[in-house]
Length: 154
Image 1 (cartoon, rainbow, N blue to C red):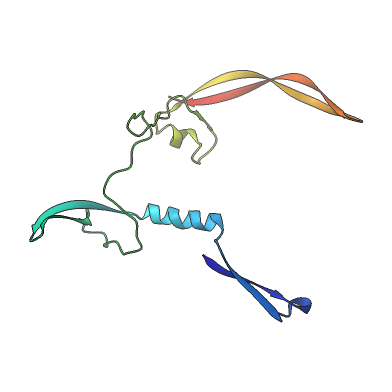
Image 2: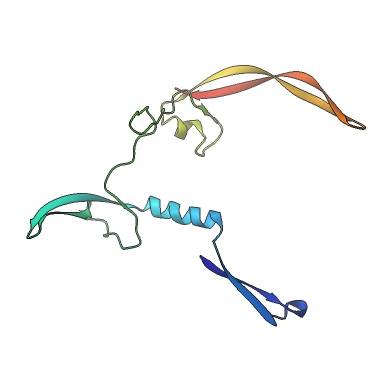
């Protein structure tokens, strides 16, 4: 939470100041969590015997990185692979998913198809077009046949 304040008075003279706690901007939170995720440390679970019995502790998997601090994210199990179907995680995989061939983002064919490539097919769609508003009260449209390239993951 962050403290936000607003001044009240003639020309913003701040005779009266009202403050409240507010949640930060959603994008700010998302960027912060993405940075944490990208720098998460992989850990290994070690079992060792102590006077109270077997104890599990976590240690960094790679000693050449700095150890995580209290504010860092850690993980000890790899993320599931969502590229291929997996009944355990409920993932259907990305085969046959529609992708955007011109995008370099998460909807782009290269990333979404996990490097497997994509197929392209041409589709004809009937859509409403050349719509005209008639005074008063209705719109009339023609139907046009449009051709689209549809890209799907292999």
